[in-house]
Length: 150
Image (tube, rainbow, N blue to C red):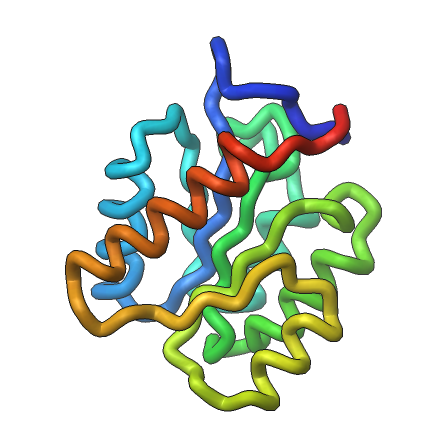
């Protein structure tokens, strides 16, 4: 599956992998704030994320593999790092941009995420406005600024 060249006339698929309902709500608000046409799929644990990415994407309303994944690291069932390893090993998602969006401030998590192929590692700000800005800017960069081949 290829990534669409632009969002004109179509929606960008975004996968949010987050087990905390409050962080999920903030992330969704931030994604709405960025002003891009998005189709957001939520996975509330690592196993759901793998199921989404290895399943029938059209059943979720997606034509293609999501253009961006925002993955928390501390998840039930499978960790965010395990999800990241799956993403990079599965041919259809190997080049999908992955942003680790986490509360972790452990340097080992940062190192492991980049070693497994994360495109970005972002710590969740505690401040509401800062959270909205960070997530919105990350989405805008990966979906509007960064160019991916078809």
